[in-house]
Image (cartoon, rainbow, N blue to C red; front, side, top):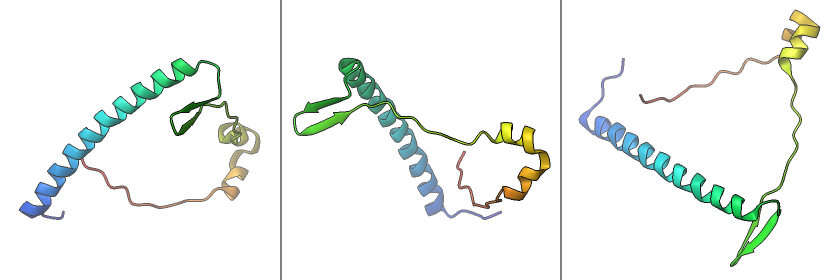
Length: 91
């Protein structure tokens, strides 16, 4: 286990404060976004001052791997990739 210095401990504490602030900002942004969407109703575009606001329906397609696994069984493993990453977490 890595032993932190007082400087690094202070950085971790600062990071946690900033994350809390970011969560509060995110909640405010979502509330304002919801107000704008409610105002727009079913309209897709709006000019608000010099800003163009769009709220359009989009459709995306994804592969249902659970359904594929039912059909293909273990043969699906041949077409899967394993990706390794490092996860940074402070709790």
